[in-house]
Length: 321
Ligand SMILES: C[S@@+](CC[C@H](N)C(=O)[O-])C[C@H]1O[C@@H](n2cnc3c(N)ncnc32)[C@H](O)[C@@H]1O
Image (cartoon, rainbow, N blue to C red; front, top):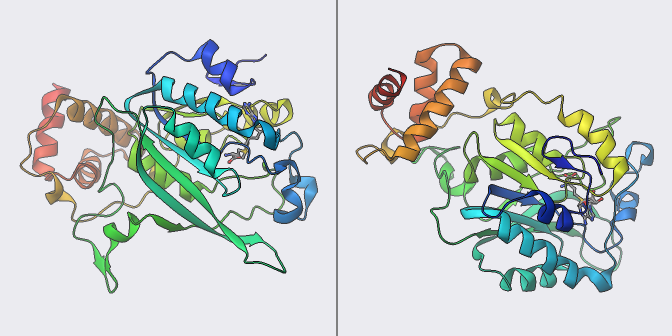
């Protein structure tokens, strides 16, 4: 079995036991095989089959319940207290995933509906065009939830608060159409992954995907300057994608992120915690690398941390001494 620095071409259940210590991962985002012959999904989603990578490994329907219990137990073990997990699931085997989650100590936070375009065509029933995203947290620590990372507390348009709308639990996000590019049969969109990673992690955090497929979680995590790790059982998918993930420059997606406005007030006046100061410094260093100027870095940090520019500059100066 090959190990490519945090990425393993192995079954995730055995792989976790072998390589991942208890309480070591900040965030898990994962999209297990759906147990509905995912190895034929491309017939619905992508007519140009030449671009779909072979080697998607399915789980037989009769094994799905035990399989879900086993991998979710590992996910719960490796998460840090306060760590978050998002599981993407279709409706067919959703009950097995929910049952498996109930056998752990993980606490349900939200049940998100992701509506996508290009649902599977049907003639005698409604078109299926959504997935479930189950958001759970491991008890015992403070969960990261960066409520103002994308829209400031006071940002509005003619339909009301942008922050509120971005945090509603029904998301309409298009699947990506990638003509001529090689892809996994069920690739998650960058927009969706960016949103999950922004809300539930900070730069430098460790993000794990137990079912990497096209390594989309890992690619976006690295692009957002997080650390990434994970498992993919298919050798064909792994061997191709490991080369692709290595091409992603840490932090390359950061300049494309929207900078929230008017978020200054969200945390103004609250005392700084040691963890927040450390996080600020880590992010400051990376912003200086990306944007070059202290002024711009402080402007961005002020929005992200919901604090006045003067307060941010003061902490940067203290730590930088
Ligand atoms: C739904 S796909 C993941 C798609 C991925 N999120 C993406 O955006 O490309 C599930 C993946 O899990 C892999 N897989 C199946 N059983 C596995 C196991 N026991 N351990 C690790 N990977 C497995 C499949 O080969 C497939 O690539």
